[in-house]
Figure 1 (spheres, rainbow, N blue to C red):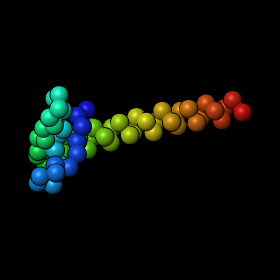
Figure 2 (cartoon, helix red, strand yellow):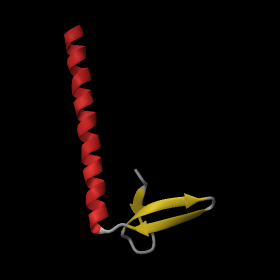
Figure 3 (cartoon, rainbow, N blue to C red):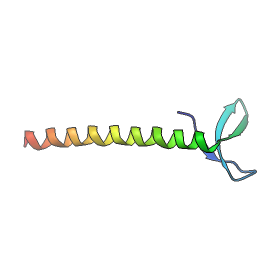
Length: 62
């Protein structure tokens, strides 16, 4: 997943590309933002499921 931040020039959300000493900001379109949010939701859901599994194992061992 690429790094996303606020562009210092226009204030919109942008992908950051660092090459050597220069940093390039590429503005994200709405459909790209929706895709990023979906990726984050999936990642958070996977993390939540793993945390619940670990929690269940810990309770069983007590």
